[in-house]
Length: 73
Image (tube, rainbow, N blue to C red; front, side, top):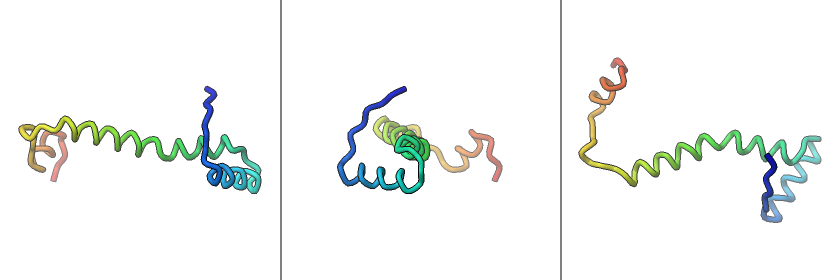
């Protein structure tokens, strides 16, 4: 899948230098950055969505949550 991406000049220059110094492609480093951070981004936006739909009636104590999920103390 091809993606077009505009980077600020300073970031593009840093990426270019890194690629030149290491003999790897800019695409390699862009892909690596995405792979390392996509899980954090997914978690962040999932948590944000859950917070927006928060229902105080769904509160549970730690003991209730551990029992619900089969975690022993």
